[in-house]
Length: 311
Image (cartoon, rainbow, N blue to C red; front, side):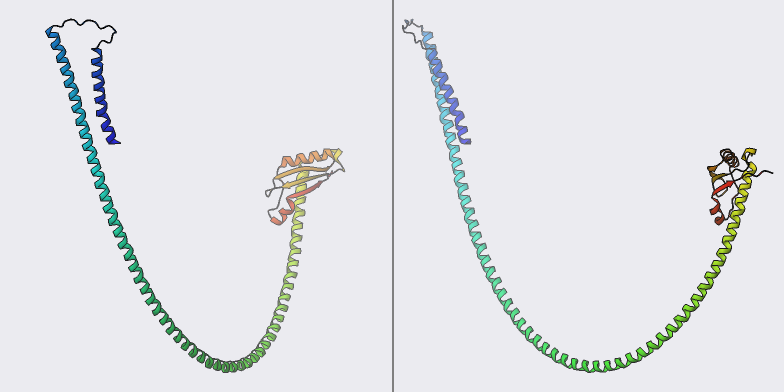
């Protein structure tokens, strides 16, 4: 492709020059039907025409020489390219021949190595088989010796076992007797312990009942005392009227641990008396309460029934 491109440029130049010469000659020629008479040219004019034609011829010869030189160079370049191609082909053929030779040598080496490996494996296999045969013979001998010893050991163990079983049977009988006696003593002791524990539990329960009853009486007494104090406190602060005589009011009161009234709600009763009772509690804000937890638990929520008394 490069050679063709190099040849095209000179040929194009030559063709352009030829076309230019032809155009110049054509412009100097008259193609009219009736040729005009040629005037007699003077000597200087004829000489000028001859000189111009000589320059054109020289120019044409130069162009031809340039074309021949370009063709010669192109042929030389093409010959050199062909020579390099032939040399490269020969070099490639030499390399391929060398590669082929090396490949043949490599394959031969592989065959020789494989044969050597096969021979070594065969020798190793034979040696292994001989070792295995010797090992099997030794194993058979050891197995027979083991079986003989095992038979002798089994006979000895059987005798020892029989003696041990007889001794164990005697020991077991003695142990059963000992355990039976120990169990009888344990049951007797357990029975005595349980009876003693039951007696202690009964005594503790009786004592607990007595203490509980005493405690309940004390708590009930304190609750009654504080309830009376609460009702008396409320009564002192109720604004009584004669119309309240013989009437009552039931009020729900909830108390905090310090006696502060958290709930003051009318449940039932005479409206006027209930209103006066509720107002008195609101003015008081706090009522008497015990610091004893058991007493407070029964006082923290009371349904108070207030009946005014008149002297």
